[in-house]
Length: 368
Image 1: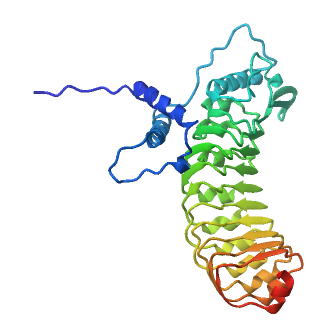
Image 2: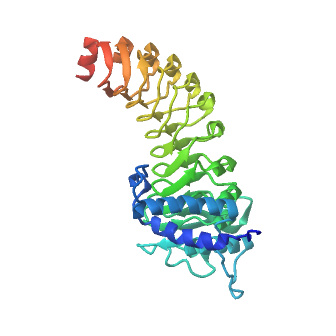
């Protein structure tokens, strides 16, 4: 007897998962959800967390996360780009589940340049027309997700949405934002893999995705991009710093509170523009390379709460701009180099919970 084929309605599955996903945007943070293997029943928070992950898979694999926007034919727009901006912003408004301060309450009508927290400017390629050049919804406590229609904002230079409750992943259509130079998604609830779409943004110089739920590896190509600032701390990235790490021209890079492993690559010494680097609370091993002394402009170096072994490089004494040095809670051994005591700008030097065998008296005079 032949078995009947069973058809699965992906739209039905997606709708069911969508309801669970949307509730998760305002539920407990996934960092507070622990899914164990004790065989017991899942609680509501765990079910919601799993549903969110499943929904992300279905939407990424089986269709875009777009919102249908019906364009009123009576609306008049200054130019086609503002028409596209209207579609993008209305789609986003439909994807917002909670706006407690009503920041998007006046996102009505065709004059998008009059919307709150939306900023217009002359187009870079045609100064005679206005386009949407920036969006700043920082600290809005808004819950929702980012629809694919945001890729219509082709003239967008600044996109700031830190300190909200946006869920999901970064839209793939962000690759169309070819003039975007500042992207701040920090302190939200974005999840999934590293947002590879940022590698397709040729003008990007500021990337801030800290305090989210991103996981997996960070692509080595990130460190070949002409960025000035990288903040990817407080996520769940697990990877080894690649050999091309030192190719990055950044002035500030913060990778703290992830799950790295391996060692600090010697190429770090090539980052001559670097002012601050914070690598605290990762799984770094091996030793600090002597090339670190080549960082003449560095003011802040924090490698605390790792498993770094060996002596502190004597070359640290060549870092004449250094103001803060934190090597606490590692496995450093040997004597602390005398040269560190002579650093002219050093104000804070933290060495607790290591295995140093000798500490210079002059060090106590300098910081004691």
